[in-house]
Image (tube, rainbow, N blue to C red; front, side, top):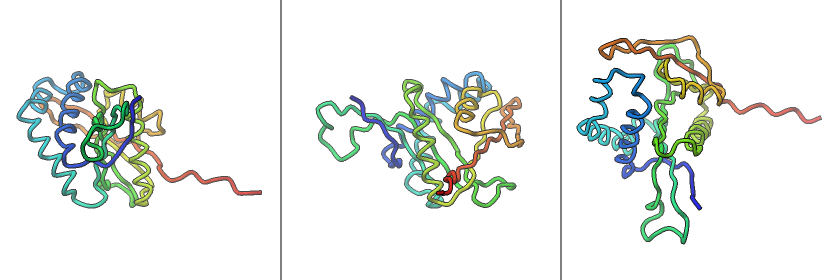
Amino acid sequence: MADVGVRPARRTDAAAVADIQVRAWRAFYRDLLPGAVLDEVTSPAARDVWRERWAESISAPPSPRHRVLVAVAGSSAGGPPPGPPGAFDLVVGFAAHAPAEDADAAPGTAELLTLLVDPAHTGAGHGSRLLAATVDLLREDGAETLITWVFEADEAMRTFLGSAGWAPDGSSRTLDMGEPVRQIRLHTDIREPRGRAEP
């Protein structure tokens, strides 16, 4: 029987997070980014840089509202092996969020910076759990709206977020990656639904 869940990332997760990022980009971004760019950002040298950046993001975030979460799965058969709590966790995905910095972002807006699941562990609900945990934390912070930028051609991510109530807000941008790569901004209202008044 497998235990699954989401928890705050630890510095010791940085290598796993970077590895998942590289594997996910290679698997999911092949048709979204120019080949030379994808090769560069997923090279062994780039992986080392990502590991350092994630370690810093996790252990020394710019603010308490900059967070990295990881989805974990581990075997509970026979109980956890010896070691500190969580040592048996297998990191299978991650998400990062922060206060929104877009110039037109209204107060109370946060941004989902990234959400990736290891290609070997897709379809098990890890992305949904990461998204739900992100929303829970942001509600505690008082955030009301959550935005994210996605590649316009990324149908899988757009479908996933669309099923969770996200929609384009009309904003777009074009990244120069040797050739233009277009992104669109999605948003969703994360305020708690108001309950019906008691009779």
